[in-house]
Amino acid sequence: MSMSRRTALVAGALLAAGTLTVPGTAAASADPGLDRKALQKSLDAVHEAGMYGIYSEVREGARSWKGAAGVADVDTRRPVRPDMVHRVGSISKTFTSVAVLQQVAAGKVELDAPIGRYLPDLVPGERGQRITVRMLLNHTSHIADYVGPAFPSLYEPSGRSLDEHRFRQIGKTELAGLGLAGTPTGEPGAVPGSYSNTNYVLAGLLLEKVTGMEAEQYITRFVIRKAGLRDTSFPRTPRIPGPHSKAYESLFGFIDPPRDYSVYNMSWATTAGAVTSTMSDLNRFYRLLLRGELISPTLVAEMQKTVTVLAGGAPIDYGLGLYSLDLPCGRFWGHDGGVFGMATQSLATADGSRQISFGVNRIKYQSIDENGQIVPSPIDFALVEHLLLATCGPDSAQARTSRPSFTPFPLDGVSVKR
Picture (cartoon, helix red, strand yellow):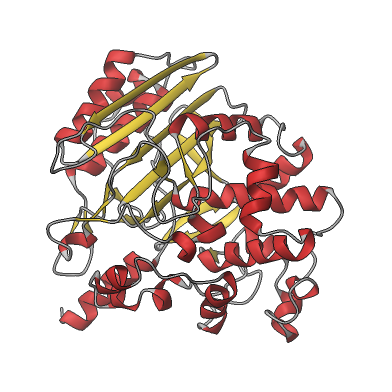
């Protein structure tokens, strides 16, 4: 395979966005319990497989377990802690969707109204009339993603533009323009949809239009504070607030040794991915959301109306800022996210009774083969085992007879099937 073809495939993986998917292969007990020793052992296994640091919180009803393994800084060997603040990437989309749905409840936004009604100058003409608010939230607008044009060296691939733009301030309108100028991935409303960060930048601009407030300010006041989240925010500076890990980006070996991007101006991610949080806060947020305490149960049901969306080439069942994942012990709801150097996964049962949120501080640690395909790492298999143990218990983990045929890796949590 030519280098140009190989780098094109790598760039496609880098610029995609999606989810860590886990195919169910065995039945598990209805009450998996919290095996604290086994959970910690599974975290240790992730670190031993090569992950620098991981932290996790698992909840079952009123019981909870928190654990961590590895280091927050590879130079000082400072250990990670379960309560560290973490960049959660595209999990921010759930927060933004909740904010938009609050405006639906207030009668200021209609889900099936054209976005051109609200943002006529930004999405004018026929396109603005065909793309609806719902299509933005469930990624069926087919508006191109802005991440590639914003970080063009990813097409090479190299980390040069990541370094050049570390302190760049870029506005939502400019980001939206980059995506809108790109080639559409399909016709508005067509299924499967195509995951695009541009959709949630436009959702942020929609919020600003109908509320008269900066979107981040609105989400902070009426979503984050309403949920009682103490360690969740849109940071005001390039630094992560509170105790945190460094964020190591490997770029599939094109950045070697892995580079720390924990200090970064996150205006490039804004309402699509700039939130920082803790694993405990994430579990509380999704628990309250799924129980109808942040928006009405009717609107939660709207969030759970899924369509097939392609993310990194893999299909996922995506709703309105929320996706479903069928595990051996049942269906879970949540989201995942990745930014340069950090990735996060948060999942909960429909009633919020069983939950896991975990974060890692090194991403794109896999290698690329001669065909431009991502080669799964032992880290991937260890992460899946931790996820299955946390969600479905030891019966599920022990019943697995083969390793998963996919690689979980995030730039917003890309999954590439082998």
